[in-house]
Length: 209
Image (cartoon, rainbow, N blue to C red):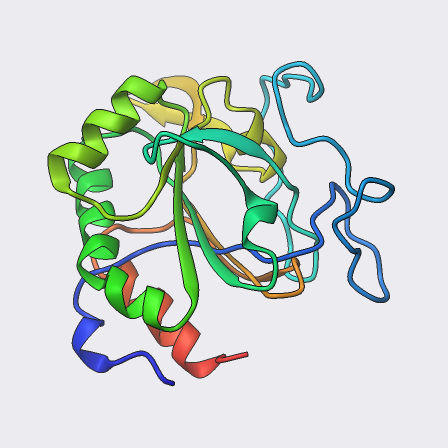
């Protein structure tokens, strides 16, 4: 079933699938079992690198992770094995651009769910901020708290940013579509919150599998 045009007025997200591991390899998808699937990203097994990283590429295997979420449960990317996932990274909860982006996904979430597509938002906020943001705007999809920005590093979105002539490390607003096979199917870099939902839905409509 195609995504309905009616919902292409407010939404923005990213995506994930199955068989997750840290580095991509050609051939058949890796099955998510104890012998092939590494530990999810945590502050103890992923080194911090305070430098800009490179984004993942189409065809790379989406790294698995485990993070606290606004649902009150810990969520793993591998929980969505066999589904397409819109996995979007945003800089900070309850700021103007991030609110616009999140509310776009919220308004279209029923259409995503009806098509079996999961939406996950990730930011380096503490779980308390993520919970408050989700509750304030009744978002209806999970926000994940990557407090130590390890997952942001894995996905290459933890980058050097510049503001008012000063540089700092932060999230480069980016959305990944993860296919059912657990590989990166599409990348939306340098995302602009306004209208991003239309970009994502259009791509999903044009690439239904």
